Length: 225
Image (cartoon, rainbow, N blue to C red):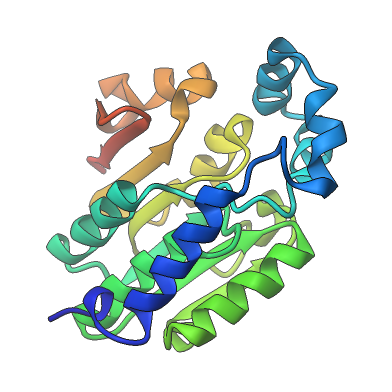
């Protein structure tokens, strides 16, 4: 038995995934008018933009933008198999990925997870979900722009980094954290194909990484140090 498969987390995750499956930008009132007014090209541009992402994600504040169950299971297994004790996450949203990572820390014996989210209403939801899941004691939620919140007070050695916020900022966030990555640390980047700059960096061995695309939408990298 693991934290993932027992109360209170198992039933909480079931509920959160049901809610995520039922939500979409086109059917959520707070996002529908904005979303339907954008062409597919404009949506892609906003996701890739280093300047316009704040407005885009602000309109998506009521959308979970959740990882899949499969990705959640992968995060849990990677954190457990590496015996991670210090984890940094960029992009909390409603906290589903955070729950998987914190569950791994619990089952590893202890640890610290720093996660950051710029949308205040999502911070509230994530904190409530982590409290309901019995994992809030392992998690520090930093509210604000990750370029500020992750610029100071990081652990001396980071075992795992999850990038799942504004895709255009992946290189900048990696730069903030890189000096603290321990040799062998894993970096999981969701939908990294939206940021060719990031992919070029982690796929170039001279930059200190080995990296490979994994599943349909994940780039899995390891810091060689």
